[in-house]
Image (cartoon, rainbow, N blue to C red; front, side):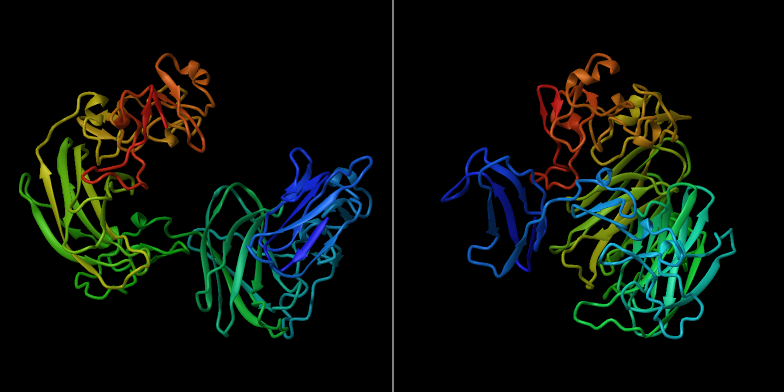
Length: 533
């Protein structure tokens, strides 16, 4: 059954109705999945009457509609065979998408679910046509270090006029993809795996370029689909838009891999670039990445301060500072203060980009770190504002190195927890992050990448972090028996896991996205009868 309408309608099928709709237990099917038409399947009763109810989201009548009822030819592909092996909208068809069309002469699945030749109508595109579906995709080489691969053609906005490429990735990793053009147009691209599942998309409206850093999950063949976006209000055209497509191994995957002060930002395409200076009233630019951080290192016990101003246009805007600790076990306090109603946040990272400390909800914001390893620690200041603002908020940032206090056990690493992220290895007097690995269930961890299961019981800023272990998903506390006594199953999370039984809310970790009560550092999850939820 298909309901066709431009309005937001829902569709019921029932065996009995009264003045308010289907009666209890009589509903055979219901569908309300879109803001327009709906399609559903139902098993008709052996005898009697079935009622079709069309309901409106709006309080008043919403508009015209049509209802089409046909006997379902199939429920899934198991019901289909031969020349029409796929089930789409309860009908056996030749193809569900273009990956179902295996021949180069008919590589496109059209709106009638039939494999057809590509449009081939992109005037002047002698380079690429016919390349309008996966089976007709042109091979493009995979880049190597310092050697990008470039190709190109022209693409039109006509139906079935997309250009397709394919490449073979030797293994998991990241690849930079850049599609560039010069004429006024909006080109987009998608990367798909051999089954047709989308791996990544470039769908922005940036003029004359779409660039993305794409995570390739495994070795294999991947497809690159390039299309010209044409709005519903525009008429598709066969006029060609010439473009180039470049595949390259990325220069960086995060800002910490950009080591030059003039280009301290890792772009969406995986290249180190200069920061974008769009803040008004920010005289301290450029300070947009770790490599351009201003130095706040002072003498131990002496506060060192600098002033600055930060906005959040673009959204990636941030001011960076750095402090160097010279001996294992040193501590560090960082604070940012300002006047007015701005909301400035402080985060501290190690030299690899791992978060060491965070403060969100206070003025001044303050982070306290203890038992640090020797090295450079980076401080990031950001402005939260919605909608984004270009006017920079002035602040003073202060850092103070504190005396060496070496750790002797992992318990020392968990003593300071309110703004410090747990680093679960006490090594040579300093608390350090546990190296990623495949630790077994029940062994110590400070993050999920330490564990074979991918799950660690640690929640940010919890008081009992030293008890954190590699854990597993659960539905009830009985599922946690393999971890030993004293473990309970969390309650109310999207995925519940086994954690040490809590004695207070502080043992349950912080809900960093939830506003705390006035004066509190964080809003904590709740401990109820030993269960965090």
